[in-house]
Image (tube, rainbow, N blue to C red; front, top):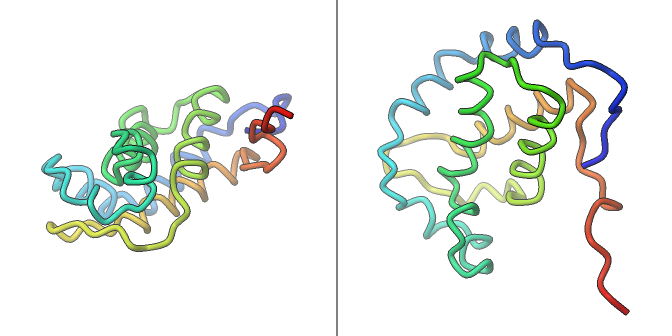
Length: 132
């Protein structure tokens, strides 16, 4: 993922964004039963041979969950990993369904917003080019 590698992460800004959505985020992370039922609703999960990294719950837990657990204190490399999850492994098609009512697309969108606030974006040029 391309980003402005010179700019330090503004941990205070990240923490404020997390705090603004704290109740909804905490509920989503606490309610998730790791039942994997959301996986069946994700076409990327099926297209990638049911790779667990494409399960909607995995994407939320390893992006927003990681930010929440570390209170936003993640370095730029950590943000690059999160951006890979929220942009390359999710297209925000809003098809994901959680039987417990977690709004998965909203959680992924929040993780994207936090990445954008730190100048970490998805760049098409970062995709591997096919061999000729």
